[in-house]
Length: 457
Ligand code: FAD
Image (cartoon, rainbow, N blue to C red; front, side, top):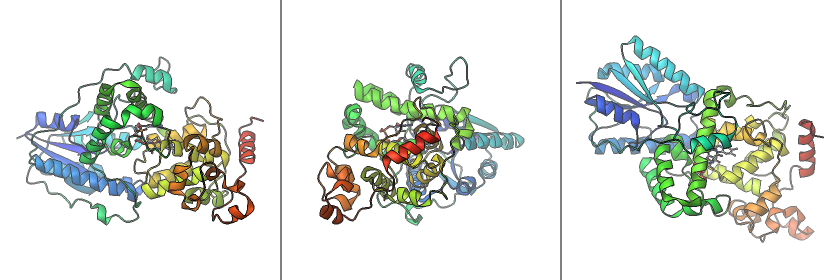
C-alpha cells in the first residue's frame, strides 16, 4: 500500500488542507507529522505564549485526526532528519508540505528536497495553504515583488481563489510509526495570564462568530481601542488553524463595507509575505535604508525598559504595552502607536521593539511583525516614512473616553475621560495623588531629534 507523509508546519488544521488532501488522494495510508524543530528553539522563536498556543493546536489536531481514525505523530529534533526517519519507518514514497515565505522555510524546503531525493522519495510543496495568493504569483512589470500595497491589492482582489476543501472523512496511519507525547499547555511556564486558547476548533468557533456578528461593523470599529472590535483571528492565521483562502471566500460572501475592509487586511498579510519571500534580508535589515543611526538598546536602556514595562508616562502607550504582556496580543492601533513611540519619538532601533513583540505576541510572525515594524519606522514600504504618531492625539482619537487606558492602567482608573490621556496636567494635589510616572520624553524634543536624524530640518 502507498504511504505518504504530511509535514504540518504553519497549517495546523484539517479543513481546507491541500497537502493532506493530495496525500490522501494518492496513498492508502498517511502519516500526519509535526516536528518540534530544534532550529526554531535555537533561533529564539519558541517563546512561552506561542508554545502554549501551539500545544492547544497540536492537541486539537490530534483529536480531529483520532475522530477520523488517525492520530498525530510528533517528533522533535532536526526537521530534515526526523522527516527522513519517519518516511523510512513508514515506507513512504512521498512527503507533502505547505509552502511558506520566510528564508528559514525556503531553506527547510530545499534541505528536505535534497535529503528525500537522495533516499529516492519525492517532496510535494503546496501553495495557497498559508496565504490566499502565493508570494511571487503577482508581480509588477519591473520587479519580482510589489513594493507598494495599493497596486498589489488591485491585482490581489481580482485574483481567482480556489474552492476551499472540506476536512477528510477518514485518515489511516500506519501502526509502525510511533509518536513522542504531545506537548501540554500546562507544562509551559511564563505564559501571559490572559492568553487566548488555540486550536482549529477554537479558531472555527471564532470565525463563525466573527462572520455572524463582528465583520459588518469592522470598517467603522476597527480602530476603537476600548471596543476591541477586530477579529482576533491573527494567532489562528499564524498557526494556520484557519485557512486564508477559506477566510477570504467566506468573508466576501458576507458582503458590505465591513467585509471589504477586513479582506483588505488579509491582503496586507499576503503583501508582507511576498515582500519577505523576495527580500529575505528584511527580517533583519532595512527594506529601504534611511541611513538611521538608531539609539541602541544599551544607549537607551532606561527608555527601552520603561517602554517594555508600560511606564513611559504616556497612558495609551502604557496601556497597549500592558495589554501585550497580559494577553500576548495587542490591538493593531496599539501596535502602531507603541512602535512609532519607540522607533520615532525615542529613536530606538526598530529591531529592539520587533524582538520584544516577537518575545510576547501569540501571533508573532516574521513577515507581519518585521515588515510592520519597518513600515512604522519608515524603513519599509510606507510612502510617508517620516510620519510620527503623537500618543496624546492618538489616545484622544482612538480612546476618546479613556476606557482602554483605565482598563490597562489601574493607577489612572479614577480619572475622567479627558484627564486620563494627560495626567501630568492635573493640578498639584490631584497629580500627587496619582501614582503614575511623568513622561520619559518631551514629545516636541523627541520629534526634533527624529527630524534632525532624518535630515529633515
Ligand atoms: P483584524 O483587524 O481582525 O485583521 C484580520 C487579519 O488581517 C489579521 O488577523 C492579520 O492576519 C491581517 N492583518 C491585519 N492587519 C495587518 C497588517 N497591518 N499587516 C499584515 N496583516 C494584517 N500581525 C501578525 O499577525 N503578527 C505580528 O507579529 C504582527 N506584528 C505587528 C507589529 C506592528 C508594529 C504592527 C503595527 C502590526 C503588526 N501586526 C502583526 C499586524 C496587525 O496589528 C495584527 O495582524 C492585528 O492587530 C491582529 O489582530 P486581528 O486578528 O484582530 O486583526
